[in-house]
Amino acid sequence: MIFKIKKSLALIMMLSLALTLSGCHRNDGNLGGAAGDSDDDSTQPTEPTELDILLQTLITEKNLGRSATANRDIPSINSPLANLGKKLFFSQSLGGNFDSACASCHHPTLGGADELSLPIGVESINTQVLGQGRNNSEGIPFVPRNSPTIFNIALWDGSLFWDSRVESLGKEVDKNGTESGISTPDSGFGVTDKNAGSNLVVAQTRFPITSNHEMKTADFENGSSRDVIRHHLAARLGDYDEGAGELTRNQWLTEFQTAFNSNADTEDLVTFANIGKAMGEYERSMVFINSPWRNYLDGDITALTEQQKQGALLFFNTAKDNGAGCSACHSGPLLSDERHNIIAFPQIGVGKGDGSNGDDDFGRERVTGNTQDRYNFRTPSLLNIAVTSPYGHAGTFDSLERVLRHHINPVRSIDDYVNDYEWCQLAQFKNIANCTSLYPNVEANGELALDKLEQERQSGTSRLPILNLNNEEVDQLVTFLNSLTDPCVKDRDCLAPWIADESTDNPDDQVLIGTDINGNHL
Image (cartoon, rainbow, N blue to C red; front, side, top):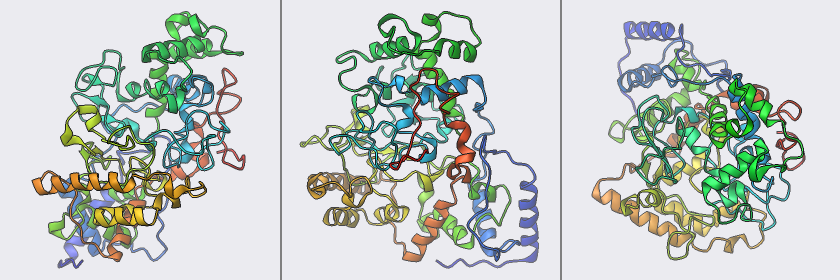
């Protein structure tokens, strides 16, 4: 791609001054993280280059420098409520059979997720093992969708989950769902759930604990309603009703009284509403945005390499302007428009029970009931993308290059995926015997998704651009995408405030202290 521009000394001086001034005050702070250096070397120019001038124009025109947190209420991990939320998040007492915690699939050192294509929730062989090596006796995952990262969950305003089944009805900007009704699976699409809680994150906490394969197990409260399940788990922690005596050691009441600054009794204080409120504050405190790209937006022109700057131009320019048009969907400070699109990633795993074989996943249609929404999934955020693989709603791809090549040619991508049995090359599946026959309908389901994508392209409703990128441009985009990651999320010491301690965060002897397959603490 050739950019033609006539540089002038005055323009360079103006840009240099603007960048310097913008670096004097930062609106976006990593609320617990620390900025780090880019991967560049000492030859990085310290004066604005032609690429900087072009990028500054884009930044100004598209308002790319808008703060992600300036108008938001972001809790501190040091607050009493967030601290209680951390203890709850890591407690296996919220797993029906004491064999899983929220952190089992969303651990800070695993990118806020689990580094698996598809989660292993309940009935794992070793409940403490997280990430690669976590397995169950069946040898295959039964959770049908990839674990999304909880990093920056406070920055979502429209919805949560791949299909947006927890959704703000007003979608007010910078509010995280606090100002209007929230619909959930309990209420149904478009209907306010009066028990959803104060924001999207609190509403989301109400559902993994009710899933057989994620946290509940089939035999715990088998056949009971979600509300009955929630009440039982709260009663377990509160040591009352059907949960009385289920914990050998139980100091939860003291923890709740401290966090909520209350002397209320256990049945009034240790409720699932308060459990969700505390866990929501913990999750919402995990804001990690001090990436090299953010530092560049704040005025440090040395934060990106020249290759990353080329990738940024490709990313934010439309195809008409010799770009890749990525920001048509990956827009705003979150780098997601929070809308739903069909990308036609290959479908692996047990699926959601859709299609003639029951192993497909119709995505957003499952929530809205509208066939036009079939195979549409919410646009993921690209913040911290370097640590959140595998990618896609089913964890189909494990590299950013492979994701980009699917975007360039979805038809060829699915053909290659099927012909090369690429799911068997994923770390989670590569050692499974007879892996090639594990998911026999990948091709058939993929063709259905491709047909739907083509229909949308023919009707002009698809927002997936038709791309023609060469290898150099793919490399430029990959390097830019890697600049969207805050160094803190790769640093265990930096993440330490969000990781439970075996001594201080263990009110019931059920704290999950995650390890890798070799027994090393995460």
